[in-house]
Length: 97
Image 1 (spheres, rainbow, N blue to C red):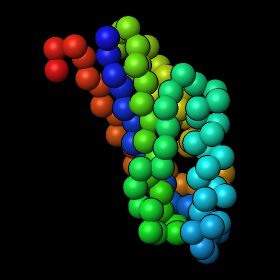
Image 2 (cartoon, rainbow, N blue to C red):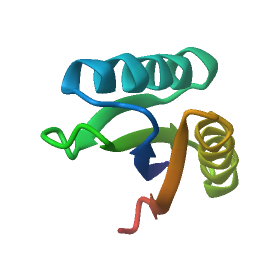
Image 3 (cartoon, rainbow, N blue to C red):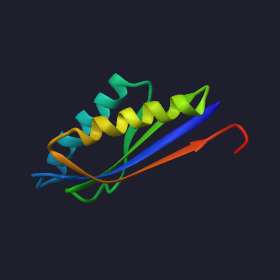
């Protein structure tokens, strides 16, 4: 069993309040959960209205499948025109870790 995680640091476009931020971040998180077998949530930068940190987790039987799913999630987020991806980080934990 392998557990993969992805963190995506985002710079939001034309956002001027935390309410507008929620209107941008929530649809991204919902689309990740709807399209892929993952758990996803906003996990950081809660007080900053132009920044967001989204966390994604997946559990799979092999490492390659974890990487495939997380790469697809990363591409989905990066393809959104209203945001800029500042950085991403993938981590994989196996049974021996």
